[in-house]
Amino acid sequence: MRLLAGIALAAAAAFGETIYFNAKVVTLDPARPIAEAFVVDGNRFGAVGAARALLQSASPGAVKVDLRRRTVVPGLNDSHTHPVGAGLAEADGEVPVMGSIADVKAYVKKLAASTPPAKLIFVPKVYSTRLAERRYPTRRELDEVSGDREAMTDNSYASVLNSKLLARLNITRDTPPPANGKIIKDAGGELTGLILGYQQVLGPLRASRQFAEEERMKALVQMQKAYNRVGITSTSDRGQSPEGFRLYEKLRRQGGMTVRTSVTYLIAGTGKPEDLTRQIEAFPFTTGYGDDWLRVGPVKTVLDGGILIGTAYLREPYGANTQVYGYTDPDYRGVRNVPRENLVAMARAAARLGWQMTAHATGGGAIDALLEAYEEADREKPIRDRRFTVTHGNFPDAAAIAKAKQLGVLFDVQPQWFHFDGPALAPVFGPARSRWFLPLRSMLDAGLVVAGGSDHMIKYDPRLAINAYHPFQAMWMTVTRKMADGSVMNPSERITREEALKLWTVNGAYLTFEEKDKGSIQKGKLADFAVLNKDYLTVPEDEIRAIEPVLTVVDGRAVYEAK
Image 1 (spheres, rainbow, N blue to C red):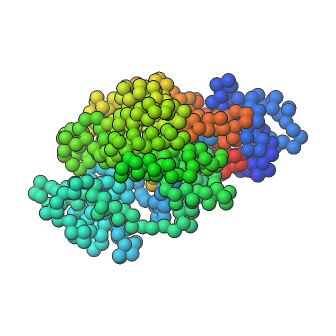
Image 2: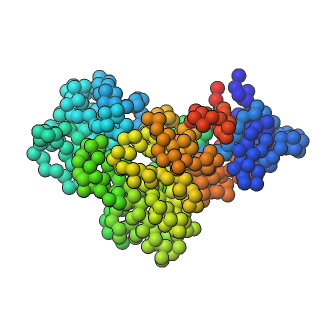
């Protein structure tokens, strides 16, 4: 027997008045934080309050749903996903969780036996910070299991190529190092197989698989359903091209969306500043264009690299403890992709034309550079009302937090990295820098609006995906600050359960200018909510990560019901 015996699904299909009662409703409405019942009238919330009063005032045809003392929360909002790419990542079969070099080798061996001989064996998103050995595999280790096949592991920057692939690309010990990367050699001068950067050569290998529109549409639909299963009712797709926008528009016209989506327009920050300005001026829309299901989000560029691959742009050099990344370069600060003048030009154009702007900025140096560009734009036209954002923002120090508050800048953060990668990264950054690794307590105390997300890219499994997208697992991370090895990173930066829930509800709605329609259970707002199998506010702390929705409702209609 289902939790609600199918009643909720029937009520949603009727799209009339439905009263959900006998519940603990965590409304996130300051005027009434907890309620017993609420009304859904069409696709919006009606009255919220005491069960007896709402049941007595119900219309004759109202459907009444007993939630059996379950806890209800507003629909959850993941502020950073890549659902199309995530759905396509397992188009050829499940990508296993790889926690060691032995796991990587086993997967390569499996692919060697199951894929066509002429096809490249490509293993995506292999991060040394998540391997037990704290290093990448070598080409010799790939050779042992790839047979007479070309093979590579990859994470979009650091790639390991086996000997056969190196030979075809004519990369030898005598190949000059590229200006945009490194070819790693061992103590004897032999190639290890690890290549950093070198996009002009490795980029085509990463893009070797092409997908038809119907495959991409299927992936998007399946991924939205997967998000519904964990209570996600809204998200921000954080990087799309015009082709991606058209895919969403087609699904919206077909009435097939089950996750409300704000779509970010991604542009390169290269070229001349005036070219970037003209590119933004040429867009036929601005942030907010659309409807309750699909809307245009911010314009975005990628300012630096990443903390998992040793290319985040830091305030000072990485130093001596970079072996986990496969290189030793004590003077290296990371990658900065966008010159100052280009970043300022983008910010000014965005502010002038009514866009919200964000940029991928992971390292402290990148955060500072982005805030400086925002400050330059603010001198010409105030940006506070445009809610400019820092995406990722892993290391905001006290000065950066203060400047962000002054400018009204928001943060879109992902707690997965300090949890999964903190044990490997703490020695790299050292105590002083690690002190500012996602300092949520300091950010919230300063009055910053911080939205929670996942940066989900690969795998359907919500807890094992890269990066894991289960909201309650992420909330648990922010509440406990526990890392994958069981230790606690900077316990003073813990936040409360209520604050964590707001990161995935109220704050996510504010990030997309939708706080009047989403983020809390209040009369007049869109009827998006999740019914949980445990009480989020009272379960033992370590059980937060195990919470599962038993019912997810979007626009007044059930989109997921647990068996």
